[in-house]
Image 1: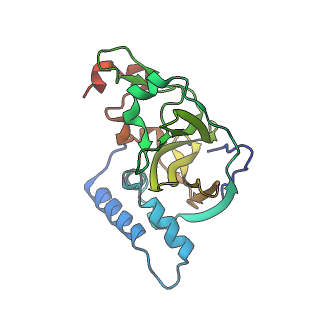
Image 2: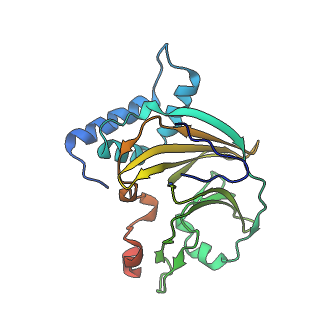
Length: 238
């Protein structure tokens, strides 16, 4: 079933062991996703695969979890308007300054994606870079105007899914990667393409359910990630 989101509230969706053969298959699959050009495929299909290829680590994880995963199978879905939500002062400027390394900045560093700091805590320590991620089931993606130190919500998901990664594809356009969780070991991968120029968000969905444990994916942006209650300050020092 294709995943659709309303403009009023975007809600509903958020490493395993890898053998040598799975690793080879994952690499080949990612390369194929970035260079699809057959006579039967539409430009939309090629565009969806190219966006998915921006997340080689996530694609490799999905392939390692379920060998049936094919990175070229992503399809472009519905496009909606972003909810009209205001920017608010960050309010926790010290926290964002200390954990700036967890934000994903655009090319000129004027805007940043906040995938991880929703309700995150800075742990005490002389570096100030230790952190504990939120333990709640919800996921919120924020957009930060770094010069003005303001933040707005871009995407909010309930307990049925998560966003695990993001990438800028232009100064005013970015892609988020995540999944709709079907069960503890089943999911449907999802991408969201957000265009700030026309205030639109497009869902890019994977048509099949995969057997994969989303909680096992470790985003390299989080450095030495540990279980939420076990993230010692010493583990996060540079």
